[in-house]
Image (cartoon, rainbow, N blue to C red; front, side, top):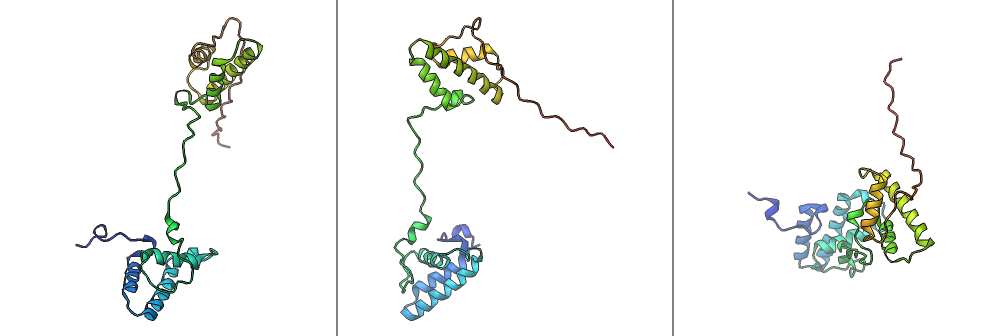
Amino acid sequence: MDYNTQREALAMSEYGREIQKMVDYCVSIADAAERQHCAETIVRHMETRVPQNRDNADFERTLWDHLYMMSRGKLEINWPYDMSNAETIHSKPEPLKYNSDRKRTNYVRHYGQLMAEMFEKLKTMPEGGEKDELVKLTANQMKRCLATWGQGSMDDEKVADDLARLTDGKVQLDLQTFVFDRIAHAAEPQKKSKKKR
């Protein structure tokens, strides 16, 4: 049995194996004029395989680029376009680099990257009114995050424990004196009544 998996891989699978066979035959033609005519005929057949691309401004140019790629650059004809960049059509972009300046925060994902930066800042801030205000803002935002993302309990003890742990013990909330802002719970969506009229 002759399976596709055992055959040579297609350079452009969207055109199918028959067009690839035509291109291979065209490459083998000895007469230059006949080879040119054959290449132009193949491009017209390729056009019928991808009619959805016909509205593109550079549709014809793309077909010739594809022909060049299907011939693996071996087709010697008078190309109507410059083929020097034809190989770059299927080149993959460079992978994006991970920003190594930002620390991974998987362990506090529900608090987010900005909150992780606040924890780092609180570790090094000198004592004073500015730090006290930042602690208040941070603790209240942590409580809002817990309410939003539903990470179990959003009680004051959890916020105080997390803040102490994430600042390496530099910030200890005194829950006897510290007052959190009032945080409204998100209203539960009301169920529609299924009463018959």
